[in-house]
Image (cartoon, rainbow, N blue to C red; front, side, top):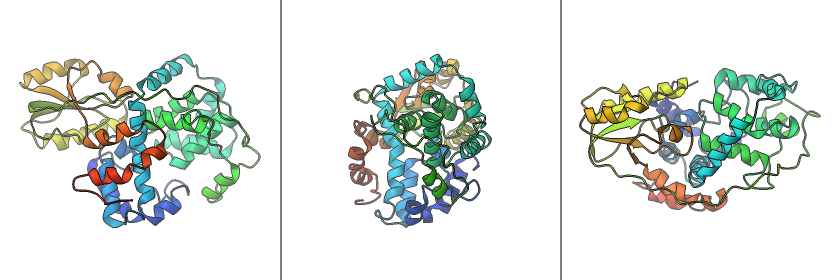
Length: 370
């Protein structure tokens, strides 16, 4: 696993950039296994906490490839922003998910699956990999979710919560909505079925679960996503501020402000905690004071002691937003999110049509077109 630092993320980004074109397009769905992956960046945890940003990824791709050659990689970066925007415009989906998790007990069959004791060799190996490394290849995540839902016939919310507990890149939007998509309830009636032939081909024969999977299951029958709401307005801080970082954006910086102190909210997960500490160190190097951990209940007093207004980066819908809802801070949002999130009102394909314009809106523009 890469170190949870911006320096490590940037080094890996530079190393992987030459493969963001045809290599990624051809090899991104294949998983030769831990230690052998060449055609995926394995930077998802760094992007999740914004040790490196989506814009960093896109610019790195276009620095070495034409827009056409890097099209698939760039689309996958924007998928993350699409999912974030989709949930941001429908916060009720997260509340409903959390309520259902709280009301759904873990059954012995679900626990056996989490423990890697189903008897399906590929699934059990992936369950162990998830527990031991905090990472799964993206295509593997789809296979695992599909086997969980359609072969093992377990409740999808328990599987989604299992992923959230273990993944270093655990993200409320990408995880919840991807599990819904596999189940056939994100895009109603369109589900994803794991097939033995596909698994054997894309694992280079490491696994071949022929005869073990339900390859004829129907999609789940649950309510479709609600209609999109309007993106809530963000604040534009000015003047003397105390910057409070959280695990959703550890490298945020309020441009045009006089930042006189940097604090960070402690995170429970080890990767997120280390990422926060690194981001806070980077930010503190630009201020007269050292970075310090600040408990949520003490944030107002901390900012007042600095004689500054409390400012924090926007926390998108998820557990971090829930935990910080009562903090009396001004919440600033990145331009990338302001540009992308309002476009997630329908499916990804209408969103995708906006990618060329989104690239042109970067300063300076990342590319003229895709």
